[in-house]
Length: 602
Image (spheres, rainbow, N blue to C red):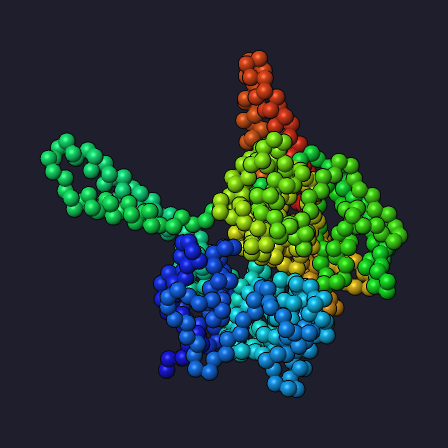
């Protein structure tokens, strides 16, 4: 017997004054569905979710909920006007006596129901909206980036709740570990089309790459056919008095077919310039303590950061991660102990609150108004890693179109604001990158690129994140802030920290698990000698060594020309400098390989 759909969209068309967002879109959500809704930033994911929630009226088509089906929506920027406290908002649709549901969700999500709406932060408002949805438990839940502003323990609570719920849900999230754990189907929004695969997010990237490969092959075949038909049309004129009008029309149809193809959006052209090298010792903290009133942030904390380290700070919200971060880079003083910064440091900061961005400024002014990016006498250019570039051209490298250049920053989505901030910090050379919650709102492709850049960045990275997948891919050292001033240093990323502590993935409030199964896992991590990140680095180093050796060989061949200095002195100097840099990198990479290989054998 066929099941009655919870929600059905039929022939949906939607346009916001320009190209269609959707045209002819149809999809069905069935009982029990657990769907990941994925796509590039700006592709229309949140818009589609608002259409499903009935908050955006399509230009054409129908949105029909099943009989008696309730649809609940958690949006990114909830409207709490008219409510005195967060608890009043969260309990609005509940029956009298059901306030315990909000209190339970509040405990898991770490928000205070008695907090006044007028004084609540954006993160607290979002947590209240999520608590409201979880307390109401509608038949279909629509969740737009629910893990933003949640710490790892709150994400764990939400993950457990969603695994146990009987409700169907559609989920937008940048947190790949969260999506992999929860979803059994995937909706992919891509250039106005929505594709469905009845497999969870874990299978998405392989599916996406296969679709793109097939598209490239079809586009290549179409281009070859157009060239062949065009050659026939031109060369055949002299041999025939009259064209075959049918083939001419077919050629026109082929050209129209190619014009109708929407080229997929490229990856942001992000790049990092490590600038001049810092000293080998970047920062050193000895016996550092810090408290705010009765709340102890760290007690007798000691850490040495060497050039090239990849360090992550993890822990619950409010435990003091950003405070410790600010102390390490000299923006805040400890109560006791010392922090010494190394020589020649150039720090680039990606702040959690995006405070470096002024919502009332345009994207154009946000770049040209930055003193470090301003080009004297050139109002339409910015300085990017020492070279002038047109503002619009640089914005396009970060996937902004020309029309957005004069738009206010406040009109951007969360992911777009993150990309704009990355554009600012990546324009200037740095040798220390400080990233406070960089993954919020970024799409999968941009996250992949950011991780790749951090892997090859010839500087030091210190980051705060609640994204377990990102931590595993980037961090080589994890500082776990566990409350009451405890800050413990562990080798590796999140999974390595969990294994060494003998915990399950979330461990409640970071309390060691009593499960016996966890102990062998921890022993295995110690015996292996290498962290998750170090294993990947050891596998990648042979390829990097081969590349550097090949580049050195080319440069040595170029410099072997005895007349090069006389003929092209600038080229000679650049080649000489490049050779010295490559030789230094090769020496450092060989040293790193030896250390990791010895550690693996041990």
